[in-house]
Image (cartoon, rainbow, N blue to C red; front, side, top):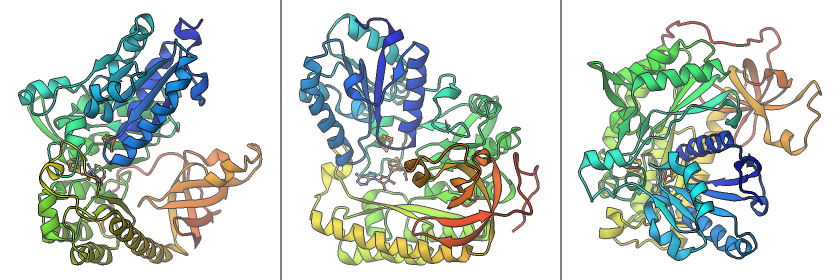
Length: 484
Ligand code: SAH
Ligand code: SF4
Ligand code: F3S
């Protein structure tokens, strides 16, 4: 019998964005404290958790299919607990039990702290357990906000996928209500975490050896908190954490174009540990479509923002997201998005086919009238254009020397399981402008800033070698403004 957590095995599958990756890390850490061990085999697991995403239908299908496969295997394991947690739990609620009655618990993004107790309870008494937040139409803003609790327990260094990199949540929720998007429903109202909690977490992470933090928020540059009578913006928060000893790099995602203020760009320019990289999704290059999406800006506004980025932080890399085949998108309108990619030459773009989401304005009011084949074709055309541009612009890096934060062995070297003691293995890291660099080096370099000379390219990465005259370990130089 496996009644005590000490011999419990946990399997967790995570889909979706960085928020979900962080949530899973924290949930696993909490369960490990209770004595659970991770397994990569669902068949061996006493507890199976799916941390889910609802942003596109495909992500939900994946989870419902996985749940379907478990229906029969559970019959042979009456003690097994199956939980659906995260965004789809908040969105589909009871519907999950209807579609998959063998699921024991459904836990929304605002109730993740309850998971250890809920698993115990599920094992003691078999019944469907549901813990979710209020719907956004069902109560006052304050009541809804209170029902979405940010889940940020003490960090457990053993649970991080990389000892040198960590996500730090600075906000939850979103209030922009783009017409296609489910996130304001699944993550609740926008709420910024207090600076003192964030700064304490960053210091703790740096003390544990973390070199790079990525600050997370759905619209991270909308961060705003008044603490002890002082207003904190994202720029203030970054300044306050910048000199944390041991920390080498600070990134933040995802930016909202309208909230890209000069104070933030000046911090990116002046503070040496801040990545010169901004992910600012445009979604479309056509004003009618942007309006239909209720994005809150025009192409001209986006262009002004790009101009300010280039004026204040020359050479800053910018990446974007695009949705193709949104309701009523004509070929001409699609070509305007292609034009935007040509004009701004993004470092990379994430491209998505529009997927209607129940409960959103677009799904209620607009017809999903672009055939799947057209969406697919537009997606491929856009991907080809973006790849061509990324590759062309990467050529400019050949012959340059880049400061790379070394992240770990490359995928290829992991596949071939090179001898960990061998002097050189294929490593991967990122430049300050977030470009991927692959090079040969000793594993001891992992977690350090290393100078790499770029001599070649692949479609997605720069290829380089270590600059032998100067190898730099450890922290970035102290606060020297880079004037550019
Ligand atoms: N908060 C971020 C993005 C959140 S979702 C922002 O505002 O930029 C990540 C990306 O998924 C979005 O940028 C958008 O491009 C895409 N996306 C969101 N809803 C979608 C939908 N219904 N269909 C297709 N793509 C979608
Ligand atoms: Fe969704 Fe728009 Fe909010 Fe991003 S800003 S999470 S796309 S509603
Ligand atoms: Fe998906 Fe939720 Fe993230 S819907 S994209 S996991 S916020």
